[in-house]
Amino acid sequence: MSIQHKAYRFRLEPTAEQRHSLYRMAGARRFVFNWALESRIDHYKIYGETLKLAELSQRLTQLKNQPETTWLKECDSQLLQQALADCDRAYKNFFAKRARFPGFKSRKDSYQSFRIPQRVKIETGQCYVPKVGWLRLRQSQAVEGTTKSATFKLDPCGHWHVTIVTEFELPDVSLPLVNPEKVVGLDLGLKDLVVTSEGERVAPPRHFRHQESKLAHAQRSLSRKGRGSNNRAKAKIKVARLHQKVSNQRRDHLHKLTTRLVGTHDGICIEDLCVKGLARTKLAKSVLDAGWGELRRQLDYKCLWNYKQLSVIDRWFPSSKLCRFCGTIHDHLKLSDREWVCECGAVHDRDFSAAHNIRLQGLRTMDAVGHTESVNACGEDVRPALAAG
Image 1 (cartoon, one colour):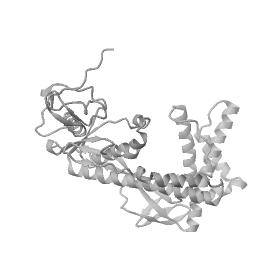
Image 2 (cartoon, helix red, strand yellow; image 1 turned 90 degrees about the vertical axis):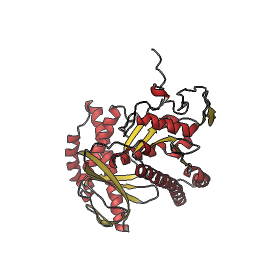
Image 3 (cartoon, helix red, strand yellow; image 1 turned 60 degrees about the vertical axis):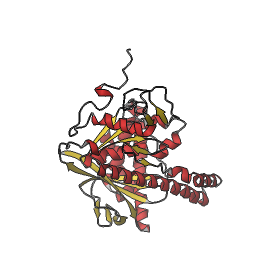
Image 4 (cartoon, helix red, strand yellow; image 1 turned 120 degrees about the vertical axis):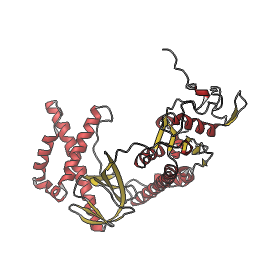
């Protein structure tokens, strides 16, 4: 058995009083985080060492008993302890050089959140929050597994959401032998979002591009509003809703695509792309709009949960420049060459040929029925030799 985690995200529909309680709990989490951060900074300036988490927890108990901060008792105790843990994690990430030095939280930030590790329950259309009560929610599916934590977040549009993380056991079943005829290779691109080795082409939806003019108009309108005014707050929500619409459309499209691919194939072969590097080029907007990283993430866990094989090809494999018939690598090809002719006379469509080569390379790492090692180039290794260093 392997332990797996699954996250469920639902939108809450609190009453006016419950919404006020959620804001109060988010404010308490922000207050405790800032208090812990300030205490650590002051302690280091005086003693030259970091204040331990256990000592902070004891000081928090004393803080709750002080007359001016007794309002902290109105919030869940685990919420406050989690704020200390978040501050401690931020410090560890800084010293491990994974993040910058933690900063103080602002009440003006549109992103407000708090986490409660236990005692949050989900029933049909309802969510129980300690010190708040039962809240209505838009439950789209049943929650399975043991609840490990619940995170409540306020999005920039002003909607509260709860994310439930559950834990379940996935049986350690050996992956079945795949039928090579049910293995597909995927080539990701910008002209076509996905080109499969079966010849299917999925057009890029370009959700951000379609909303770009509306976003530009809304952002110009926002920039003209006075800071701190009600009109600026309304304009800010309009911009946030447009961004949220683009995000929801992209996520919905990718979920439908990956679910269909996993459901109709025994194995999937895909290239390991460096999305972060591509996002720093002149094609950054189109690369991020395509959502390659999210597509790969969904394929990873959906193949795992459905006992399907996923083969990730090395990013340096010359899938686009390789002739699948003779094994010749054409290094002179440019990105603008969408079709090319090999010396052996074969005519290749760049994207379809890449998807086919990705499939053949992926089959080498899969347990396939009746599959042999020699999948191309008469059994020879077509991967370029490394230069001697």
